[in-house]
Image (cartoon, rainbow, N blue to C red; front, side, top):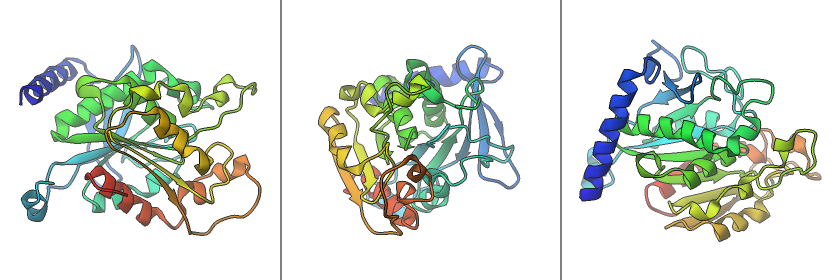
Length: 296
């Protein structure tokens, strides 16, 4: 009880801090769109936006079963991470990303969602690039997480896919206190980089992060038919071998419209086994079971 009181007081302080910053929590409520656009002041001179769909009120059955606490999923897309959210909270880029496609499924499962765009100073050709693994990126996500806690009063999980898995693991490993996510989900995690590439950040993978610091529940999901060079499903066990999650599970998805052939970078697109094409509902349901305390 004392820990909960301390966390609540910390959240009140953080929320109060938002009030005095002009851009700390400016929200736009679209009449029709993909979510409420929330703009947060993050690092000096930069802002981070996310599209927020609040969690639905728990059903009577959920309350009776003591599973009625709300959960919001912070969704971290892959690729450049620059979604280019419009005024209605809809992404103009990365529309085919598996997490973007799964937002309605997460909502139907009873979760809120926060689709996070690249910060204002990382929206160039490479988007987030090597910033994904930096402590500063984790602090940007800390502002998103604390803002969501203040808004919902519930749990907040980070969910990252492909290059977004670097962002999710970064937040889970580096953040503490009210900013620490309650759990983490990595799908098609980026486990293989390219050392010596033209751009240094292409060498990055989740293994460059302090994974040993992750102690929250952790779910790692990949597809057996994923031919993306960056996310071989056979290596997922290496992630949980380093993390210290109180509850951990590795899941290898099978089936779907697999694409035979040698591994390459073209297979890293969202509408392939890398993005669980035509199996979005199955994967979202498995994630929901794990987040609620069960097995995938």
